[in-house]
Image (cartoon, rainbow, N blue to C red; front, side):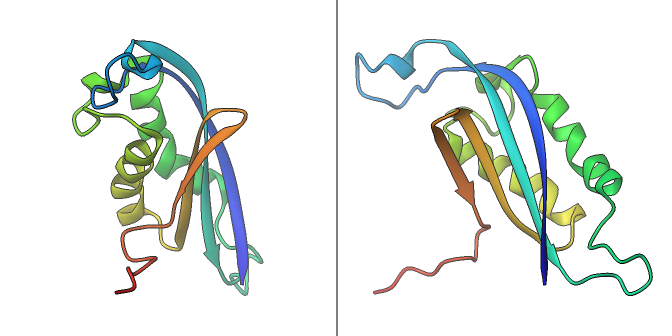
Length: 126
């Protein structure tokens, strides 16, 4: 089993409307986002790779282009664009077109990141 990673970048502005009054993220601000798409799989016996990086990029790039240089709150489904919500938004668009998708990580800054493993990765223990 192999794990392939491809990094994408996008610049965008957002505000978080559901934070407490006075929270700095309630104000419009921007980030140089970095996102990583992770695919897991076995080697193709003939090609000796999991997936062609060009194919991976072809599936993902249109979604990152939609986010780039935009106000995230104005994009359908991103009314409250936390890192968690952006990860889920990307997952729902990429997963149907990318077999083996394992995780999506979104970094707002060099020290803050969120990783999403899909809707069925973890089950809540009662």
